[in-house]
Structure formats: C-alpha cells, structure tokens
Length: 296
Image 1 (tube, rainbow, N blue to C red):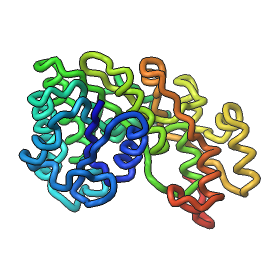
Image 2 (cartoon, rainbow, N blue to C red; image 1 turned 180 degrees about the horizontal axis):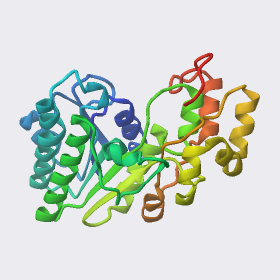
Image 3 (tube, helix red, strand yellow; image 1 turned 60 degrees about the vertical axis):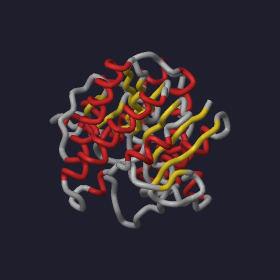
C-alpha cells in the first residue's frame, strides 16, 4: 500500500511519515525541502497535487496554516490553504482512486466551548465548537467540506483532532499529558491505527493523552486541581515534589479520547513520565522549566 503524507517536513508530519514507512511505501509533500519531502511545492498547486496522488491508496493530510500564523496572514489565506486546498486534495484523490483520506485536525477548534464558566470543560467529539480565530474557523470548515466529499463520493474520511502537541516547559507539558496534551509519536501511531482500521464513512476522533479524570471531576479540577491530581495521579505529585515544582491551582479543560481508543484500538504511551525522561536527556521536544514561575 502507498501513502501520501502532506506537510511531511513539519514536526507532526515527519513523525507520521517515519512511523508509516515501517509498514508502507510512503511519499511526502511539503513546501520545505527535506528528507521526508518527495514532492516539494505548494499545497495549493493543483498540478502538483494531481501528480502526488497518482497511484496513492491513502492520503494523510497534515499540511496547514496553524495558530502561530494568526495575525501574520489574513483570513483569506487561511481559507485558501486550510479549506480550499484540502477540498482540492480530497477531490484529486477521489479522481485518482484513493481509498481513504486521513485529516490531521486540532482540538483547538472547539474554542470557547472548551472553557465553560466555573468548571473545567469536558470535551468530546460531540461538543459544539465555538471558534475564537481564523485558524479555528478554517479547520471547522475543512472538516465540514470533507464530510460532504465523503458522503457524495463514498470516500472513507477519518479526522484526527490532536490536542496540544509542541515543545513547552516540562512541568506544564507533564500536567497537560493528563488533560489536554499529546506526544507527536502518539499522534503518529493514531494515524497508523486509522489507516489499519479504515473505518467506513466520515469519522472524527479526539487524539489526546489518556486522562485519569472523569466528567464528575470537572468542577473540582477548576476549583482545586492539586487535590484532584493528588487523588488520581499521586505519582505525578511525587515527581513534582522531587523537582520542587508546583502544581497548577486550576485546570480548565479535559479532552476525552476514549472514542478513538475504543474504535481504533489506539493507546497513547508517552505520558508525563516520558516528558520527564525527555527533559532529563535534554531532548529538544521539551523545554526546561522557567525558574520562579508558578503554574496557573
């Protein structure tokens, strides 16, 4: 089987490319030349897309403008790159006989819905988004466009909404692995599971670390996070004490990834302990803690 990965020079795209190449023939497309970009060019180039999808069985689409681009490019550019180019790629795939389209999306699109007043938000695939930015709106529109294409052309489409996944201070990252964060390697494994299962129709899944919390904890997580963390994750509390780190006073959201774990048999393995290991081995995927800063 042959897989095309777009955005293959980026952190997440590269991780997906490397994970998939253990199982399949993989080609990458990115505007940045690198060892994982077999096609170099703009995702909006229709001739390039038609060439890239030739002979492809599965498309994994990670290429996009992201949150850091907000304020640097206008909303029209988000529409062109994140929405129109996604539609163009999917339709080119349909014409070329692609059997499955996997779209790398984001939990950020839930926006204001993630943080209700007075409690931590419990976010599932059924939460109605309340977007905050052009980025959020563009990812919602891209998902909606893929839903339409999936229905009209009987193309299996799997949307994987990944949670927070970028280098940041280790204490913050460790906490987020309990509630709203994920390792790029686990994101890559989720894409592999999606390809292996190839569920029919249009499917959407949240990709986030396995949480020790449940919906009933949300009010207390917002009001007294240290007490709930101590109850549900004492090992993390011990690790923080050893390093003289503070626990956050409040947590504002939890992303529930139970659906993907049940339906795709995916399991995240890079938990808060892996964050600490990366810090201790000076891995560039995690930043040192900021001295004198307390978690919110």
